[in-house]
Image (cartoon, rainbow, N blue to C red; front, top):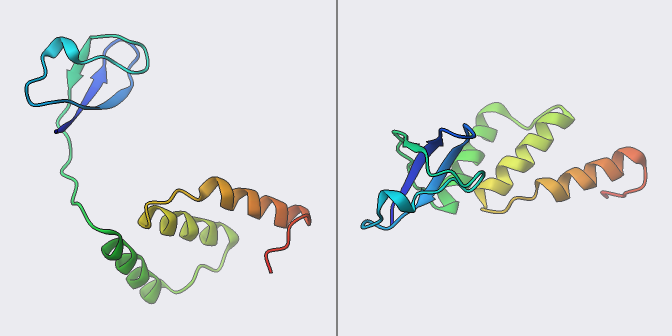
Length: 108
């Protein structure tokens, strides 16, 4: 089933809808406001890659740029690694960083 992108003319949000090939136009509904006034967008092509390919790309970037030298850079690297592994660890990592900064946590 293809994924189509739309712009809601009522609330202005961009939405992606998974619709069957035989879906009728009246089946398209904005999940944010319930409007049926959606305009189909031309989507970018997304190159599908498996987890290994995403991690290899991240590793190659680290080889070229080196490890981050700021806390912000380290946080961004952890977020990217989590996304590469299809795991969003950002909330957990932010909590760990905040605990460490406050002195309540022990990352060692």
